[in-house]
Amino acid sequence: MAEKNLLIGFGETLTAEVTPPRGGGGKKHPYTFQQAQKRLIPQVKALSSRIQNVPDEAVPDGKLVACFTLHP
Image 1: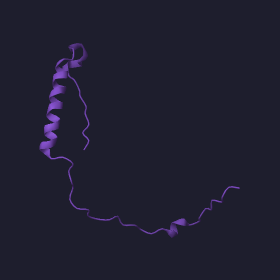
Image 2: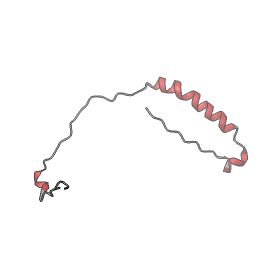
Image 3: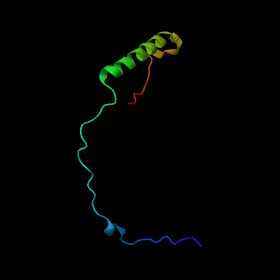
Image 4: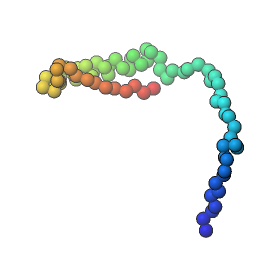
């Protein structure tokens, strides 16, 4: 036989306000600006050269859009 699953009436009366902890110190960045720059500049240059090779027929109104996501 299945166990009983009891419904508690007025369960909100059993709750209490919980305040989240404060502080935690300063933000720790995963990379310095120089490290990020060293890694990203070659990738952006490679993207730029690939964009130059896209045929004009594939670029409406002479505009090309690229999207990339940075993760820490």
